Image 1 (cartoon, rainbow, N blue to C red):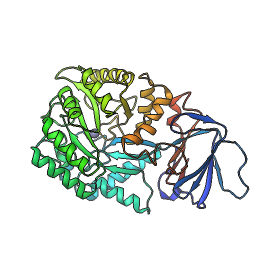
Image 2 (cartoon, helix red, strand yellow):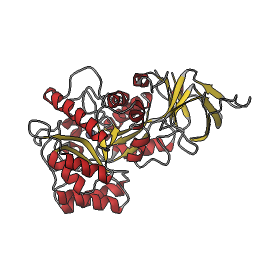
Image 3 (spheres, rainbow, N blue to C red):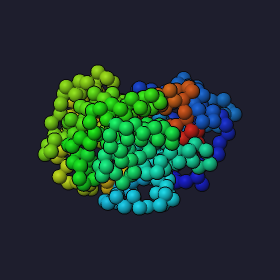
Image 4 (cartoon, rainbow, N blue to C red):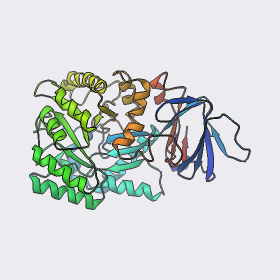
Amino acid sequence: MVASGERRHVQRPRIWAVRAARLFDGYTVRPGRPLVLIDGSRIAGVDMTGAPPSADLHVLDLGDATLLPGLIDSHVHLAFDPDDKSKEAMAQEDARTTLARMRVHAGQQLRAGVTTVRDLGDRQFLAVSLRDHYTAGTEVGPEILAAGPPLTRTRGHCWFLGGEADGIAAVEAAVEERIARGVDVVKIMATGGVITPGWGPHQSQYTRDELAAVSRAAHAHGRPVTAHAHGREGMADAVAAGVDGIEHASFFTEDGVEPDWRTVAGVVEAGIFIGATEAWLPTGSMVAPHMAERVAQRSANFARMHREGARLVCCSDAGAGPRKPHGVLPHGIIQMGSLGLTNTEALASATTLAAQACGLADRKGRIAVGYDADLIAVADNPLHRLETLLDIRAVIRAGRVFQG
Ligand SMILES: [Zn+2]
C-alpha cells in the first residue's frame, strides 16, 4: 500500500526515470523493460528498447510491475462520506468541515491509483477550491475537475448540495453562475435518484427544453454537460438535448429495468459518453437493498451497450454509499472485465476513454511524450488478471512519487 501524505513524498532531480517490467500505454500492454523519462510534471520520453540508462540518470526501478497511466474516475463526490446515510445534514455543515473531509477523500483516491477525479457534485463550489489548492502545488493531490453543485429541481435529487433551479431562465442562470465560478463541467440531475426521497429514480426532473437550454448555455462557454439519468424518459430527453455524457444510464422504470435500444442507438450515433458507475466493493450491503437486482440488470445492459458501440467510461460515484468508498475505481475496472469488455478495453475505460470523456485526452490517460507524468505501477500484469490493480506499488502524480 502507498504511504499517505506529503511526508513520504520522495524528492528527486528534475529529470529522472521510472523502470518496470512492462507498460500499458493506454491502448495495449507492451513488454520490454520500459524506461519512462520524467521531466518535472511531464513525460519526456518512453524508451522501449530495454537498453541500460545512462549512469548519471536517477532511475526508480519497480521490478516486476506494470506501469499504467494514472487512473481517472470521471464520477466522484469528494464531499460525500460513503458511510453517512443522511447526506441532507450537509446542508447545515460549515465549509471548513466539508473541505477537510474532501481532502481526506482526495488522498484516498490518490493512494488507490486514481490521479484524476471529476467531482460531479459538491456544495459551495468546494471542489473548485480544492482543485485550485492542489494546482497551487504546496500539497499533492489528484487533479480535480469540478462541476460545483449539480442542477436539480426544487427539493429534487441532491437538493441539499444547493443547486436547485426550475425553469429555463433559472437553469440558464445557474449555468452562467457555474461558468463564473470556474467549473470544468456542468452536471444536471435529469431524473431523481436513489439517495433523495421525493423524486424516484425513474422520474424526470426536467423537460427536454430545460435540458437543451443547459446544453446550449454550457456549450456556449466550451464546457461539457453530463446528465445524471436513471429513468428511461430522462435519458432519452438528455440525449435529444445534446448532452455530452450520461451518468448511470440505468433505464429504470417505477419497478424494474427496461432499456430503450433506440435511445442507445442515439447515444452511439452522437458519441455520448456513458458513465458506467460500476465500481463498488465486492462485499457489504447496497445503500438500497431493493435496488440490487435492478443494478445487476443494468450491468447486463451495459454489456450489450458496449457491444452496440457505446463508449462506456468506468467510474464510481464514490461517496454515494458504504460500498463506494473513495478509491474504489479499480473494482469497477475488474467489473467491466466481467461484462464482456476485454481486459484491455476495461483498462482503457478508466484511462484513455475516461480522459476523452473529461476533455483531457491531450494530456491524460496515456503514457506518451508530453503527457502529464501521472503514472501508477501495479504488481504483475493486469492484462492477465485485472485484480492486480488492487496491488498498487507506486503512484506518481505530476512527476512526484508516492511509494509503498
Ligand atoms: Zn453521483
